[in-house]
Length: 348
Image 1 (tube, rainbow, N blue to C red):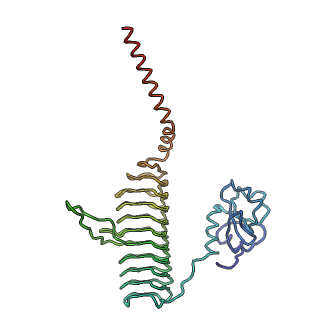
Image 2: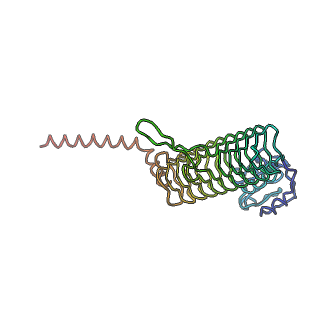
Image 3: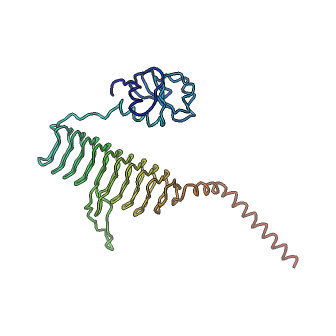
Protein backbone atom coordinates (compact mmCIF):
# COMPACT_ATOMS: atom_id res chain seq x y z
CA UNK A 1 0.00 0.00 0.00
CA UNK A 2 1.03 3.60 -0.56
CA UNK A 3 0.99 6.15 2.26
CA UNK A 4 -1.98 8.46 2.97
CA UNK A 5 -2.84 10.91 0.17
CA UNK A 6 -4.65 14.25 0.50
CA UNK A 7 -8.11 14.10 -1.04
CA UNK A 8 -7.55 17.51 -2.66
CA UNK A 9 -4.64 16.09 -4.68
CA UNK A 10 -6.70 13.07 -5.76
CA UNK A 11 -9.69 15.21 -6.75
CA UNK A 12 -7.50 17.58 -8.76
CA UNK A 13 -5.73 14.71 -10.49
CA UNK A 14 -8.93 12.96 -11.58
CA UNK A 15 -11.09 15.98 -12.40
CA UNK A 16 -13.46 15.95 -9.42
CA UNK A 17 -14.49 18.58 -6.83
CA UNK A 18 -13.80 18.19 -3.13
CA UNK A 19 -15.73 19.87 -0.32
CA UNK A 20 -14.89 20.23 3.37
CA UNK A 21 -11.67 19.41 5.18
CA UNK A 22 -8.70 18.23 3.14
CA UNK A 23 -8.70 14.72 4.62
CA UNK A 24 -5.85 12.32 3.94
CA UNK A 25 -7.00 8.84 2.97
CA UNK A 26 -4.96 5.65 3.25
CA UNK A 27 -7.44 3.05 2.01
CA UNK A 28 -10.78 2.44 0.33
CA UNK A 29 -13.69 0.65 1.99
CA UNK A 30 -17.47 0.10 1.76
CA UNK A 31 -19.74 2.70 3.35
CA UNK A 32 -20.79 0.43 6.20
CA UNK A 33 -17.28 -0.57 7.31
CA UNK A 34 -15.14 2.45 6.37
CA UNK A 35 -13.19 4.33 9.04
CA UNK A 36 -11.87 7.89 9.29
CA UNK A 37 -8.81 7.04 7.16
CA UNK A 38 -10.89 5.54 4.34
CA UNK A 39 -12.59 6.73 1.17
CA UNK A 40 -16.00 5.24 0.35
CA UNK A 41 -18.30 5.86 -2.58
CA UNK A 42 -22.02 6.02 -3.27
CA UNK A 43 -22.97 5.01 -6.81
CA UNK A 44 -26.44 3.53 -6.16
CA UNK A 45 -29.03 5.91 -4.63
CA UNK A 46 -30.71 3.08 -2.71
CA UNK A 47 -27.68 2.97 -0.38
CA UNK A 48 -28.01 6.68 0.41
CA UNK A 49 -29.30 6.06 3.98
CA UNK A 50 -25.86 4.62 4.79
CA UNK A 51 -24.36 8.10 4.35
CA UNK A 52 -25.78 9.09 7.72
CA UNK A 53 -24.08 6.30 9.66
CA UNK A 54 -20.87 5.75 7.68
CA UNK A 55 -17.63 6.62 9.49
CA UNK A 56 -15.71 7.13 6.21
CA UNK A 57 -13.30 10.05 6.18
CA UNK A 58 -14.40 11.02 2.66
CA UNK A 59 -17.37 9.94 0.57
CA UNK A 60 -17.55 10.17 -3.23
CA UNK A 61 -21.00 11.05 -4.62
CA UNK A 62 -22.69 12.34 -7.75
CA UNK A 63 -23.84 15.95 -7.76
CA UNK A 64 -27.46 14.80 -7.34
CA UNK A 65 -26.57 13.09 -4.04
CA UNK A 66 -24.42 15.91 -2.64
CA UNK A 67 -27.21 18.32 -1.62
CA UNK A 68 -27.08 19.02 2.11
CA UNK A 69 -24.04 16.81 2.69
CA UNK A 70 -22.04 18.48 5.50
CA UNK A 71 -19.19 15.99 5.81
CA UNK A 72 -16.01 15.95 3.65
CA UNK A 73 -16.96 14.64 0.23
CA UNK A 74 -15.97 14.55 -3.42
CA UNK A 75 -18.40 15.22 -6.24
CA UNK A 76 -17.52 13.09 -9.26
CA UNK A 77 -19.34 12.40 -12.49
CA UNK A 78 -18.88 8.67 -11.91
CA UNK A 79 -18.15 7.79 -8.25
CA UNK A 80 -17.27 4.19 -9.12
CA UNK A 81 -14.69 5.30 -11.67
CA UNK A 82 -13.20 7.81 -9.21
CA UNK A 83 -12.98 5.05 -6.59
CA UNK A 84 -11.15 2.82 -9.09
CA UNK A 85 -8.67 5.57 -9.92
CA UNK A 86 -7.99 6.31 -6.25
CA UNK A 87 -7.62 2.62 -5.43
CA UNK A 88 -4.89 2.35 -8.07
CA UNK A 89 -2.99 5.12 -6.28
CA UNK A 90 -3.42 3.60 -2.83
CA UNK A 91 -2.73 0.01 -3.89
CA UNK A 92 -0.17 0.24 -6.70
CA UNK A 93 1.12 -2.83 -8.50
CA UNK A 94 4.29 -3.97 -6.84
CA UNK A 95 7.56 -2.94 -8.40
CA UNK A 96 10.02 -5.54 -9.71
CA UNK A 97 12.92 -6.72 -7.60
CA UNK A 98 15.39 -6.56 -10.44
CA UNK A 99 17.32 -9.72 -11.18
CA UNK A 100 17.06 -13.40 -12.03
CA UNK A 101 16.46 -15.84 -9.19
CA UNK A 102 19.21 -18.46 -8.89
CA UNK A 103 16.62 -21.23 -9.26
CA UNK A 104 15.31 -19.83 -12.56
CA UNK A 105 16.31 -21.43 -15.88
CA UNK A 106 17.00 -18.75 -18.49
CA UNK A 107 18.38 -19.76 -21.88
CA UNK A 108 21.65 -17.96 -22.70
CA UNK A 109 20.11 -16.54 -25.88
CA UNK A 110 17.16 -14.98 -24.04
CA UNK A 111 17.18 -11.23 -23.32
CA UNK A 112 16.05 -10.21 -19.83
CA UNK A 113 16.14 -6.49 -19.15
CA UNK A 114 18.26 -5.49 -16.17
CA UNK A 115 15.22 -3.94 -14.45
CA UNK A 116 13.04 -7.06 -14.84
CA UNK A 117 12.38 -9.69 -12.17
CA UNK A 118 12.47 -13.43 -12.91
CA UNK A 119 11.33 -15.56 -9.99
CA UNK A 120 12.18 -19.05 -8.77
CA UNK A 121 11.59 -22.05 -11.03
CA UNK A 122 10.75 -19.81 -13.98
CA UNK A 123 11.77 -21.09 -17.42
CA UNK A 124 12.63 -18.57 -20.14
CA UNK A 125 13.21 -20.18 -23.52
CA UNK A 126 15.69 -19.53 -26.30
CA UNK A 127 15.34 -16.17 -28.02
CA UNK A 128 12.71 -14.90 -25.59
CA UNK A 129 12.64 -11.23 -24.55
CA UNK A 130 11.52 -9.98 -21.12
CA UNK A 131 11.02 -6.21 -21.23
CA UNK A 132 11.95 -3.45 -18.81
CA UNK A 133 10.15 -3.49 -15.48
CA UNK A 134 8.42 -6.81 -16.15
CA UNK A 135 7.83 -9.41 -13.44
CA UNK A 136 7.71 -13.14 -14.12
CA UNK A 137 6.66 -14.85 -10.91
CA UNK A 138 7.41 -18.34 -9.61
CA UNK A 139 6.91 -21.39 -11.83
CA UNK A 140 5.91 -19.43 -14.92
CA UNK A 141 6.95 -20.67 -18.36
CA UNK A 142 8.01 -18.25 -21.11
CA UNK A 143 8.54 -20.19 -24.32
CA UNK A 144 11.01 -19.78 -27.15
CA UNK A 145 10.92 -16.47 -29.02
CA UNK A 146 8.21 -15.09 -26.76
CA UNK A 147 8.31 -11.32 -26.29
CA UNK A 148 7.06 -9.60 -23.15
CA UNK A 149 6.77 -5.82 -23.37
CA UNK A 150 7.44 -3.28 -20.64
CA UNK A 151 5.94 -3.69 -17.15
CA UNK A 152 4.28 -7.02 -17.90
CA UNK A 153 3.19 -9.04 -14.85
CA UNK A 154 2.96 -12.83 -15.14
CA UNK A 155 1.58 -14.33 -11.94
CA UNK A 156 2.70 -17.78 -10.72
CA UNK A 157 2.16 -20.79 -12.97
CA UNK A 158 1.35 -18.81 -16.12
CA UNK A 159 2.33 -20.51 -19.38
CA UNK A 160 3.18 -18.51 -22.50
CA UNK A 161 3.98 -20.87 -25.35
CA UNK A 162 6.48 -20.33 -28.17
CA UNK A 163 6.35 -17.25 -30.43
CA UNK A 164 3.58 -15.42 -28.57
CA UNK A 165 3.78 -11.67 -28.06
CA UNK A 166 2.52 -9.64 -25.11
CA UNK A 167 2.47 -5.84 -25.28
CA UNK A 168 3.20 -3.35 -22.51
CA UNK A 169 1.53 -3.45 -19.06
CA UNK A 170 -0.19 -6.79 -19.66
CA UNK A 171 -1.29 -8.65 -16.51
CA UNK A 172 -1.84 -12.42 -16.62
CA UNK A 173 -3.23 -14.14 -13.52
CA UNK A 174 -2.25 -17.55 -12.12
CA UNK A 175 -2.68 -20.66 -14.21
CA UNK A 176 -3.54 -18.99 -17.51
CA UNK A 177 -2.23 -20.62 -20.70
CA UNK A 178 -1.50 -18.48 -23.74
CA UNK A 179 -0.61 -20.14 -27.02
CA UNK A 180 -1.61 -23.75 -26.43
CA UNK A 181 -2.71 -25.60 -29.57
CA UNK A 182 -6.15 -24.87 -30.91
CA UNK A 183 -8.66 -27.66 -31.50
CA UNK A 184 -7.69 -28.50 -35.07
CA UNK A 185 -8.40 -31.99 -36.39
CA UNK A 186 -9.40 -33.51 -39.74
CA UNK A 187 -11.51 -36.69 -39.94
CA UNK A 188 -9.82 -39.38 -42.00
CA UNK A 189 -12.72 -41.82 -42.12
CA UNK A 190 -11.68 -43.92 -39.18
CA UNK A 191 -9.50 -41.59 -37.10
CA UNK A 192 -8.59 -37.94 -36.55
CA UNK A 193 -5.53 -36.31 -38.12
CA UNK A 194 -4.09 -33.45 -36.09
CA UNK A 195 -3.74 -30.10 -37.88
CA UNK A 196 -0.56 -28.33 -36.75
CA UNK A 197 -1.34 -24.99 -35.14
CA UNK A 198 1.29 -22.66 -36.57
CA UNK A 199 -0.13 -19.24 -35.68
CA UNK A 200 0.62 -17.18 -32.59
CA UNK A 201 -1.21 -15.33 -29.82
CA UNK A 202 -0.80 -11.56 -29.96
CA UNK A 203 -1.84 -9.59 -26.86
CA UNK A 204 -2.14 -5.79 -27.09
CA UNK A 205 -1.07 -3.22 -24.51
CA UNK A 206 -2.92 -2.88 -21.17
CA UNK A 207 -4.75 -6.22 -21.42
CA UNK A 208 -5.65 -8.18 -18.27
CA UNK A 209 -6.24 -11.94 -18.42
CA UNK A 210 -7.84 -13.88 -15.58
CA UNK A 211 -6.80 -17.03 -13.76
CA UNK A 212 -7.00 -20.37 -15.60
CA UNK A 213 -8.08 -18.76 -18.85
CA UNK A 214 -6.83 -20.35 -22.07
CA UNK A 215 -6.18 -18.51 -25.32
CA UNK A 216 -5.34 -20.88 -28.18
CA UNK A 217 -2.72 -20.05 -30.78
CA UNK A 218 -3.91 -19.58 -34.34
CA UNK A 219 -4.13 -22.45 -36.80
CA UNK A 220 -2.67 -20.45 -39.70
CA UNK A 221 -3.08 -16.77 -38.82
CA UNK A 222 -2.81 -15.36 -35.29
CA UNK A 223 -5.23 -15.17 -32.38
CA UNK A 224 -5.42 -11.47 -31.49
CA UNK A 225 -6.53 -9.72 -28.30
CA UNK A 226 -6.88 -5.96 -28.74
CA UNK A 227 -5.58 -3.15 -26.56
CA UNK A 228 -7.17 -2.69 -23.15
CA UNK A 229 -9.34 -5.83 -23.29
CA UNK A 230 -10.46 -7.37 -20.01
CA UNK A 231 -10.72 -11.16 -19.90
CA UNK A 232 -12.03 -12.78 -16.70
CA UNK A 233 -11.21 -16.17 -15.14
CA UNK A 234 -11.95 -19.57 -16.69
CA UNK A 235 -12.51 -18.36 -20.25
CA UNK A 236 -11.81 -20.39 -23.38
CA UNK A 237 -10.79 -18.46 -26.50
CA UNK A 238 -10.38 -20.66 -29.57
CA UNK A 239 -7.84 -20.42 -32.38
CA UNK A 240 -7.88 -17.43 -34.71
CA UNK A 241 -10.35 -15.52 -32.58
CA UNK A 242 -10.01 -11.73 -32.75
CA UNK A 243 -11.17 -9.55 -29.86
CA UNK A 244 -11.32 -5.78 -30.29
CA UNK A 245 -9.95 -3.02 -28.08
CA UNK A 246 -11.50 -2.53 -24.62
CA UNK A 247 -13.92 -5.45 -24.93
CA UNK A 248 -14.71 -7.18 -21.62
CA UNK A 249 -15.50 -10.89 -21.14
CA UNK A 250 -16.90 -12.17 -17.85
CA UNK A 251 -16.08 -15.57 -16.33
CA UNK A 252 -16.69 -18.90 -18.09
CA UNK A 253 -17.31 -17.44 -21.55
CA UNK A 254 -16.47 -19.81 -24.41
CA UNK A 255 -15.58 -18.55 -27.87
CA UNK A 256 -15.16 -21.03 -30.71
CA UNK A 257 -12.51 -20.60 -33.38
CA UNK A 258 -12.28 -17.83 -35.97
CA UNK A 259 -14.94 -15.62 -34.41
CA UNK A 260 -14.32 -11.87 -34.56
CA UNK A 261 -15.58 -9.70 -31.72
CA UNK A 262 -15.48 -5.93 -32.13
CA UNK A 263 -14.30 -3.14 -29.85
CA UNK A 264 -15.99 -2.07 -26.59
CA UNK A 265 -18.22 -5.15 -26.45
CA UNK A 266 -19.43 -6.64 -23.16
CA UNK A 267 -19.89 -10.41 -22.98
CA UNK A 268 -21.69 -11.70 -19.87
CA UNK A 269 -20.63 -14.71 -17.83
CA UNK A 270 -21.09 -18.21 -19.29
CA UNK A 271 -22.09 -16.89 -22.72
CA UNK A 272 -21.28 -19.38 -25.47
CA UNK A 273 -20.28 -18.02 -28.89
CA UNK A 274 -20.14 -20.31 -31.92
CA UNK A 275 -17.29 -20.26 -34.43
CA UNK A 276 -16.79 -18.19 -37.59
CA UNK A 277 -19.15 -15.43 -36.43
CA UNK A 278 -18.79 -11.65 -36.33
CA UNK A 279 -19.93 -9.46 -33.45
CA UNK A 280 -19.99 -5.74 -34.18
CA UNK A 281 -18.49 -2.97 -32.05
CA UNK A 282 -20.45 -2.05 -28.94
CA UNK A 283 -22.57 -5.20 -28.70
CA UNK A 284 -23.69 -6.45 -25.27
CA UNK A 285 -24.26 -10.19 -24.85
CA UNK A 286 -26.04 -11.06 -21.61
CA UNK A 287 -24.88 -13.86 -19.32
CA UNK A 288 -25.73 -17.42 -20.31
CA UNK A 289 -26.59 -16.47 -23.89
CA UNK A 290 -25.99 -18.85 -26.81
CA UNK A 291 -24.78 -16.82 -29.79
CA UNK A 292 -25.26 -18.95 -32.89
CA UNK A 293 -25.32 -16.25 -35.56
CA UNK A 294 -23.46 -13.01 -36.21
CA UNK A 295 -24.48 -9.75 -34.52
CA UNK A 296 -24.49 -6.88 -37.00
CA UNK A 297 -26.10 -4.09 -34.94
CA UNK A 298 -25.07 -2.73 -31.51
CA UNK A 299 -27.46 -3.42 -28.65
CA UNK A 300 -28.17 -5.95 -25.91
CA UNK A 301 -28.77 -9.60 -26.87
CA UNK A 302 -29.80 -12.45 -24.62
CA UNK A 303 -31.51 -15.79 -24.21
CA UNK A 304 -30.38 -19.29 -23.20
CA UNK A 305 -31.59 -20.73 -26.50
CA UNK A 306 -30.18 -19.22 -29.72
CA UNK A 307 -29.87 -15.54 -29.08
CA UNK A 308 -32.15 -12.78 -30.32
CA UNK A 309 -32.49 -9.06 -29.63
CA UNK A 310 -33.01 -8.64 -25.90
CA UNK A 311 -36.30 -6.76 -26.35
CA UNK A 312 -37.71 -9.73 -28.31
CA UNK A 313 -36.45 -12.17 -25.67
CA UNK A 314 -38.21 -10.23 -22.89
CA UNK A 315 -41.50 -10.29 -24.80
CA UNK A 316 -41.22 -14.02 -25.51
CA UNK A 317 -40.23 -14.79 -21.92
CA UNK A 318 -43.37 -12.98 -20.71
CA UNK A 319 -45.47 -15.24 -22.94
CA UNK A 320 -43.67 -18.37 -21.75
CA UNK A 321 -44.82 -17.69 -18.19
CA UNK A 322 -48.42 -18.18 -19.35
CA UNK A 323 -47.77 -21.21 -21.53
CA UNK A 324 -49.41 -23.69 -19.11
CA UNK A 325 -52.52 -21.54 -18.81
CA UNK A 326 -52.68 -21.15 -22.58
CA UNK A 327 -52.42 -24.92 -23.11
CA UNK A 328 -55.26 -25.49 -20.65
CA UNK A 329 -57.46 -22.97 -22.46
CA UNK A 330 -56.73 -24.62 -25.82
CA UNK A 331 -57.74 -28.03 -24.41
CA UNK A 332 -60.98 -26.54 -23.11
CA UNK A 333 -61.68 -24.95 -26.48
CA UNK A 334 -61.09 -28.30 -28.20
CA UNK A 335 -63.56 -29.95 -25.82
CA UNK A 336 -66.11 -27.22 -26.49
CA UNK A 337 -65.64 -27.58 -30.26
CA UNK A 338 -66.08 -31.36 -29.99
CA UNK A 339 -69.31 -30.88 -28.00
CA UNK A 340 -70.66 -28.40 -30.55
CA UNK A 341 -69.80 -30.76 -33.40
CA UNK A 342 -71.56 -33.63 -31.67
CA UNK A 343 -74.64 -31.51 -31.00
CA UNK A 344 -74.75 -30.38 -34.64
CA UNK A 345 -74.56 -34.00 -35.78
CA UNK A 346 -77.53 -35.00 -33.58
CA UNK A 347 -79.67 -32.21 -35.05
CA UNK A 348 -79.00 -33.48 -38.56
